Length: 121
Image 1 (cartoon, rainbow, N blue to C red):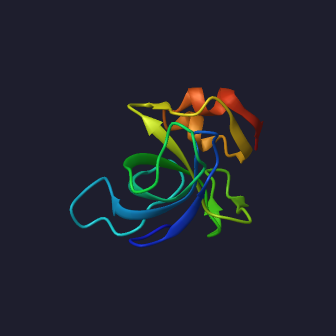
Image 2 (cartoon, rainbow, N blue to C red):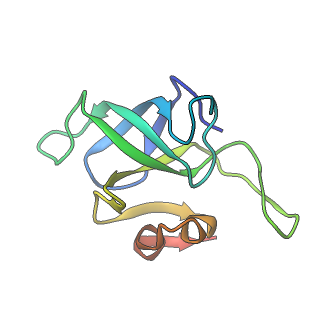
């Protein structure tokens, strides 16, 4: 569950390392983002000489959250950190995705992210 002002890590190689959430898309009163939701982020920490620079405003999709997430079969899944993947339209901006990605990402329409990921759980 990510909310306004959450600082999260980036799970791709676009160049951003840490981003801050400042808007959760999906309605004017939506407060929290969960796995598969799109958020508007601002880059806080970035690697030099990469595609993404500090202070850029981008869209990203939530791929990991610390809050336990209930699946349709009744099981729960949770991760060690909150993480996002930066988007360029509906495709990821980076060419690689690091860390585990839940299969709900593919079900929400981000099949490219699932195919680039090293592990889908």
